[in-house]
Length: 494
Image (cartoon, rainbow, N blue to C red; front, top):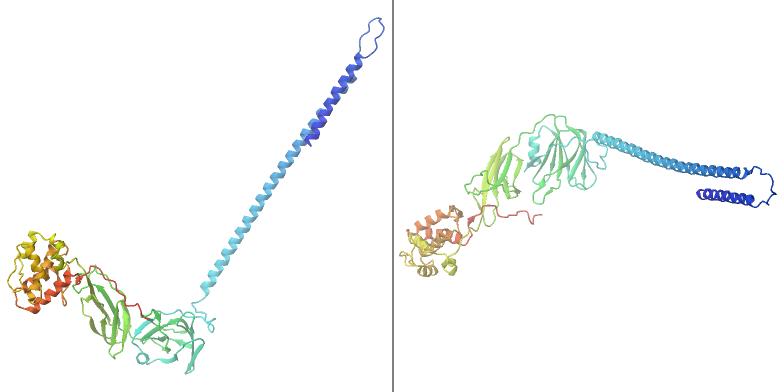
């Protein structure tokens, strides 16, 4: 469009130039006239008027072209603005649709929450999918209880028993016009759901050496779910369900059964008391023996209801562990009693000792000073013949130490005592550390003092007792450890 306007302008300008040139030729090409009186020269105005008209036309065309170009640009701008507005409108529509979708989702979720709140607690088993279950009571585990025990307690109640509800399907029993049905949830483990045509007060789920008792309160319930047996502590799984008994009672007739708690702690200071800074030992195996001779292994911490009667509780022990309390406790419990049985233990290990062989070789020789030998002289050391031994140098001391034997128990006790004294003098052993002598706990200082006194007595048995304790300490076998050693009673249990 712009190119065409330029061509027309150039054409008009060229035409003007040609017209002007032709006019000039006409003026100068006319034949001469005869001389006479001079007349005024008249120049024709037609070429000038024509030139002006051409110029005016060209200017008009150029103005029209400019206006046309401006119109085109204005139209393009308007189209671009319309496109921007249309895109904005589309984005606004999308945003509105997204907001509407979000609001719709929120409404759907809110409706779902409302519907979920209206759904009662239930286990959707095949036969009970439309059943409204009562809330599941907290089970009361009763160890050692059997049906005879419970029937004695609930002797004013009617009862219906469903035996061995194993596998899939509905298990049903009817008695005195009352029908109860139970179903086992196989996929979710040994869990029972049930319905009854009359309200049930108590449900007893028997498994293992005892079971769980569920109390549905004074109003009772006609349907329940999520009932299960106690956990077998050996494998961490629920016991298989032996049977389920439903008790129909008008009142709360269950007594407040006795409660037995068993715990174990690490007795750092070996005083037989559980002090504040001493940790509890969990998963330690204990045995409970009932008065009828039945017994069962459990793990600490144990905290269960039991039947009234006499119980013997015995703890298991591991190598290198020593009890600081009695390992066997007997308690007699009546209804309403609460009894806590506590066991204390420590484990044994090293404490920095060095043997008589160490103090008789080059390593020991580098450490033994004249001051150390003077301290040894102050002890009641003896030679093989029972006479006193006072070392006057390391060479003499080394020979005496290497020759020690138990023919004369005093001689061997003297060698072990000398080695432990050097351990303390050279900072290897803390004289306040506890060691286990075989039947009592003593500090190293107490042990050395007792051994030194025994050298003055002609009592081989006593000398041997302290000799053995010092020998174990020099060999790092009987020191009480400041923290519990690793233990495991569960590995290998099925």
